[in-house]
Amino acid sequence: MTSHSIAAQLAALGHPARLKIMSHLACDDGRCCGDVVSCVDLAQSTVSQHLKILVDAGLVHYVRKGKQSRYTINAKAVDALKQEFTAFAGACCEDKTECCG
Image (cartoon, rainbow, N blue to C red):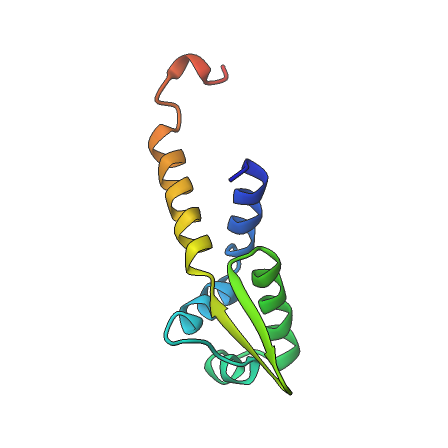
């Protein structure tokens, strides 16, 4: 992963509503937008925008089946982000010679 893709994914998770949506999507095999709306106190259009951001960041899969759309957690992407961030946090300024100042 590049630092840009990590930053984009972290930015997508940087909104409380999107964290709540991710929690609801993690509960089962997928949900339609209406299911997510019923779980969060937001308008359908707002939920759709948040879902689009999560899909664009690669953290959520979107599949259209007829008139319904299903959203599921992209477990591989979330796990990769977790590993990258853990490595970053562990290595952050270990080598003090690379720090500014």
